[in-house]
Amino acid sequence: MRIDKLLGNMGYGTRKEIKGLVKQGAVSVNGERVRQSSINIDPDEDEVSVWGEIVEYRQHIYLMMNKPGDVVSATKDENQETVIDLLEWEDAVREPFPVGRLDKDTEGLLLLMTDGKLSHALMSPKKHIEKEYEARLAEPLAEGAVQAFADGIELADGHQSEPAKLEVKEEGSEPVIKVVLTEGKYHQVKRMVAAVGNKVIELRRVRIGPLWLDEDLDPGEYRDLSEEELEQLEHALYYQE
Image (cartoon, rainbow, N blue to C red; front, side, top):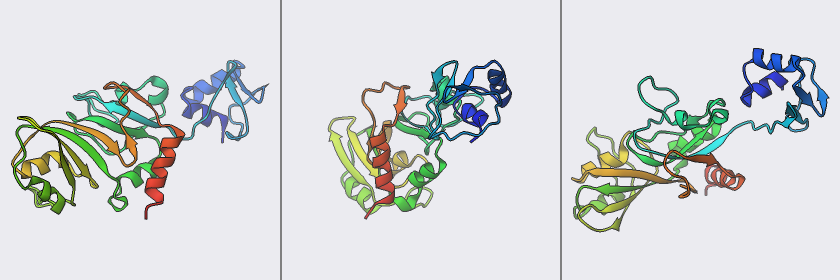
């Protein structure tokens, strides 16, 4: 890999800006000052530093965010704040993208990454990756709602949803339910709840496959996925029975 490409991927600037850093003597490989920004290196073997600070190269970044409400799950939007706007510069410059989407007013677990292959696998209906949500409803569930979800519900547009798990977590005038889906149609939880005569007031995603939302993350905060979490994802995707 060219050193200017590596440094560009890690947020050190444009190719022209990196060429300037090289001319200033700021870039070294294995302790030796680099003279040209076009040299090739091995990111796994060579130690690169800028102004004496070692560059820890990562081919991809994988982030877990606790998405707040009123923020859109998109990379760009001219009129509204996006989840990318919540990232620190060194992460935003890598240009990660949301894995699937959460509605603007839906909160909770959102993955962002630069790995298109893994993102595609997570969203593929063939993989049957579970997504778990908690929802506060306008009123108690009607009798038969749990079985209706288990059988699969025909939505207003005629789509026949896959069977889903529905469980009441909190009773009351505004009960809280748990919903587990293996597909991700537009506004699916809200539409399924509407199909059984109710309405979602608040919605939060808490799990994708084996990954649970880190409850230490406040709305709008995020962190890198751990190596263990990445291994769990890969196992869920590629080693299913």
